[in-house]
Length: 386
Ligand SMILES: Cc1ncc(COP(=O)(O)O)c(C=O)c1O
Image (tube, rainbow, N blue to C red):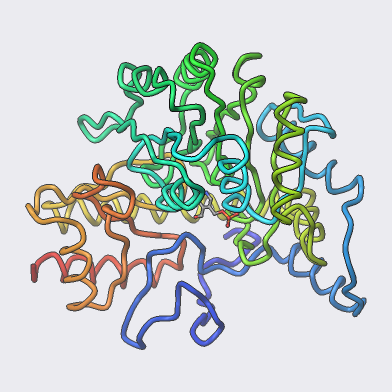
């Protein structure tokens, strides 16, 4: 028994939750937030700030910078210098802003698909075109296709790449060699890499991710990294994140971009939750990882035994299960809709993450064991009724 409770359900219905705004009989296991309350250390910090009662314009203090610096130094082996850090209200606001600033209309932005669907929006909504370099999928394992990636990088219309590290939805922690190769190719072809590392703290216990900027001087020099406490500590609604840009020329551009788009200023709680998370939340995070990866194990075993027509891709990061449904012979949009209609289970169709996700479903297992059991039974029922 740990110090923290992940088993007691929290009723999220009627709380303006995007995820839980569903019919009474439905069970949402789609959007990437967790059903757990955030760490008590963070709740206490919010309560203290709330008690103050004045919520005028906020400003960042040295403690905000130190919280990120210490966490990345201790947990991820990356020494971030204070001046590399820029506040942003979120990773997606940063990505959109960076795309707009660093490209001209109709240029191409490289993404490795299947990938987080909102990358497509950040690219298209800002006048560019996604240039997909599909990940290689073989024997249930994903890897980067460097031959293809080099071709895409060599396209003179491609000047930016958005890397997902670790990768949502396939749950992959990229290894050092792969990241180094991305850096070398990017340097060779003049491509800037934006590394989205929002899922980096949700890794299988005992294993950490590798920050792109930590891999080599090249990776450091050609990259922009987006980080945040929001995914790991379930505080996405607080809208707080940071961008790390070691290269001073690139940094100036990013700083201008975020300021022009007015996403570089914190609300009254943005700094409070960041400090509480990184300074006091480590123990909670480690227990949460144990719980979530136990959920992943339970789900994998259940699926292998009870629903052999589908296969769970084993991931070492994120609380998002990536389910290979190619054995069902039906497209994920059809399967997800049918499962929802028959059982109320709401999972995401893989097609959302690009054409390469057509025969996959994504299922969020950051929930209590009771909810997980309910979800898995519904999944089984839904698949059997197809
Ligand atoms: C890879 C990735 N990036 C960014 C986000 C969202 O970031 P933010 O809420 O900070 O805009 C998500 C949310 O699921 C995500 O999975």
